[in-house]
Every structure is written in C-alpha cells, then in structure tokens.
Length: 305
Image (cartoon, rainbow, N blue to C red; front, side):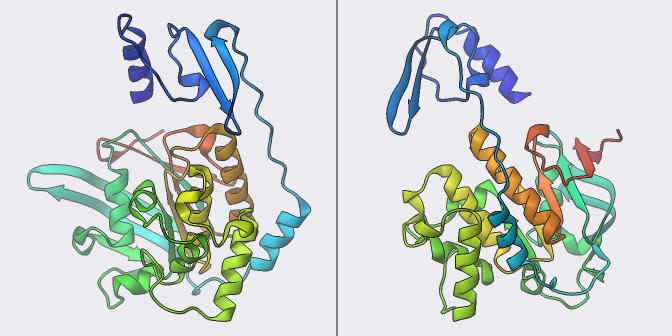
C-alpha cells in the first residue's frame, strides 16, 4: 500500500526533475524516459512508452542442486513436536498495545507465512520468539515444547534457530570475508571470533556451493551484489541446520530474478530438509511454494480470513 501511495505521489510531481531507481512495475506512468543497465553497460535509453522489459527467465532446479541439498540433509537439533506455542500473546509499551490476543501454534515441519502491513505487530511477534523482547517472560510462550523461562538461556534457544533479516544484513560488517560471515552462523555472532573445525569449514563450503557462491568465499561481503549478499546470509542461517528457520522479509531489496532464485533455493531446502519455516513478507509472489499456512496480523491482532 505504501508503494502504491508513493507511486501516485511521484506521478503528481510534474514540475520536479526526478531520477528513480526502481523495478519496472514501480515506475510512475507520467515518467518519460528509461535508462536500463546490464552488466555495467547501458542496454536501453529512450522513451518509457517504447521500453519493453525482458521477460524473466524462470529458474530451473538442477539435479546437482538437489544432490547438494540431499548431502546437507541431516538430523534436526532435538526431537520436539511444537516449535512455537503462544497463548493469548501480548506486547505493551506503557498504554500502547502493539500485540494482543494472539493464539498461535507452529508444529514441527510446518511452513508458515507471517503477513500484515507495517505496524501490524509482525516485528513484535518475532522479537518474542527470538528472545529479543523482554516481555517474552510475561507471556505464556513455549519454544521447542518448553515453556519460556523454565531454564534454557536465550543462547540455548538461538542455537536452534536460523535467522535472516534486513537489519542483520544492514548492520553486519561488510568488510568480513564471505566464508567468515557464513561461519559466524555456528555461533550466532555478528562476525567470526573463534576458530572453526575442519568439519565446520567443509559445511560452510557446501552451503556456499548450494547458493552458487563457493568461488566468492574469500571475497569481502561488500564486493558482492546485494542479492548475492542476501544469499550469503541465507547460508549463514542454514549452516548449523537449525530446527526453526525465521526469514524476516528476506527478499527486500532484491530484483525479480534474484527473488525467484532465492525463493526457489529456499523452497527446495525447506522441503528436502523438512524445515520448520516462518517466512515474513508483504508480497504474495515472494512466498515459496512449500508455505501452506498463513498468519495475518492487523493492528496487533490476528486478522481472520
């Protein structure tokens, strides 16, 4: 909704010169010219009315990719039946209620999409699950069959979770080498500060091979494209084979082809490794095919469909 509003606003600025970097579908109708770049070169410059965008090439899953995923499939962290159970969940700051009356259960192996507009409570709900919100202790919350606050530390719980978010991507040290970024996923740290075993290094390389970035393992993160960097963070989340994979708007900032590649890779991993998956997005076309359940939030409550 915010994108549509911005597009309308830009369409009304007739006396202002504007350079807009965007996907084709987001270009306001009153814009006059298009400059398209491919591989560092201008591939089109001319009238918007004459511009025909290239059709996106569907990404095909190769047998070698499937074999790579099968090779990485292994036993989950622990045996459990329910990854998340929240009873009458709520988050409140002073008099402001940002989340209320949320009853939600995620069984092992289920694949969920969490949806809703900005301000609907998605981030607050995630922060309860990841332990980044102290109000998790004020809620009746169960993670991996155990009531929150019954003895497990937040780091014990984080070991069982893989996490990708735009904020993690934004604040991570971009001078880190690619393989170290992935390896930091073993320790849930914002960098690699301890030695890893030869077995762990092999896993890092296997996951980089999975996302087609093994040849870039010794490059710095900031030397990769934005889409490649997001794939590095997916490998980081997966490297410890987490029991629960949480992806918070993982396709934000990716172009369409990058999104399709990310979505396809994730779908195959989630299916073949039977991941318990929580996928947060605003857009239906980003949702992997394996997702079969949805939780919609609106103004802090579940929006019944």
